[in-house]
Length: 121
Image 1 (cartoon, rainbow, N blue to C red):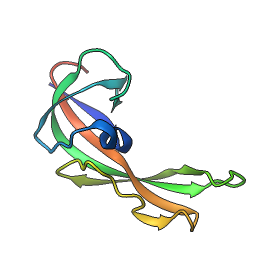
Image 2 (cartoon, rainbow, N blue to C red; image 1 turned 90 degrees about the horizontal axis):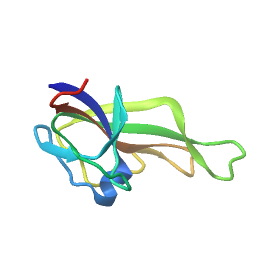
Image 3 (cartoon, rainbow, N blue to C red; image 1 turned 60 degrees about the vertical axis):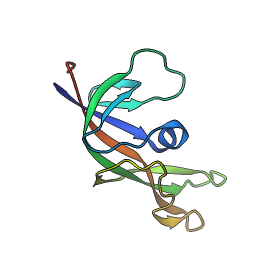
């Protein structure tokens, strides 16, 4: 058995994902390679990776208005927080703190999952 870190982005779940809990067996299309995979629900073909969810952490990211960007927000480097949860939600909170009007906010951007899979590195 191997443990893989898998990022499940909020938009992937909200679009066509199915919520899951710690202990569930899941089958996902994954892209990437160690140390971090991501769930891809759009456009990939091939076999699903099957595994058991061992832990779930909510990922919250800070965003700031970029200078001279015409109102564009970008992730703030180093401003990412993890919070353990027992279940992945279908819908994520936006914003968690702050507001676009203030020029800075934090929002939930997905979950980080430890997935136990057979074989692999």
